[in-house]
Length: 265
Image (cartoon, rainbow, N blue to C red):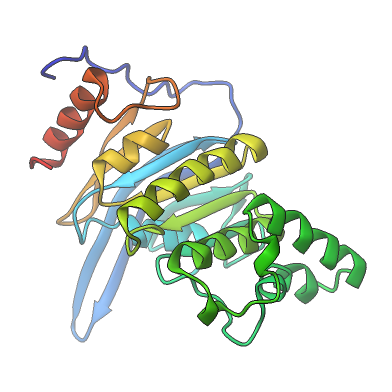
């Protein structure tokens, strides 16, 4: 790498308990008489509390892997364990945040955030307290009674994040959640997401096309390539937070990851 010593390889024998253990996972889709392999041989071990970014070009299987972890897609081969149990479908222990927010337009901000606990039959007072807690965490107290169409894109994404947290998810899965936002809003939400992660110690798996965003956020960056989708590198990010995108080490890391992707970004 141009200006940075090679990063240490990921230790496979670490004692930290894995909340996610992915071993040789593949996914195939049938299209008429053809079978397309979207992901092949993915092996990844994620300890509780880590912030991991998945990067790679379109068609490399990032979103497919995320959807399998969420339980939205079945595994064609291999083993996918969440807290030692096979992932057989969606569950409240895994929450998904999408680029298009996925909010219920007929519910207020407060009701969207409290939807999960209410659906699980929690007492009304508990649902109200949970919604209030996460409204405050994402800074939307004043907009509690607003509807999604009355919010900016950044505010909608805050609601989406709060809704996942209120559902007591242990793992937060984020599929390019800031991709449609303007640069300033994106930077603000990146900082806020890190603050939430640091205060809750949730496990976050974050899909992005942007190398800079991955370095800003993650403790580890998993690099994927297409044809079929596979993991080609698992790199630790040794920079202290907050990180400076103009710094020498940051940009050396950016060049290193771009080289792993096979193109300059």
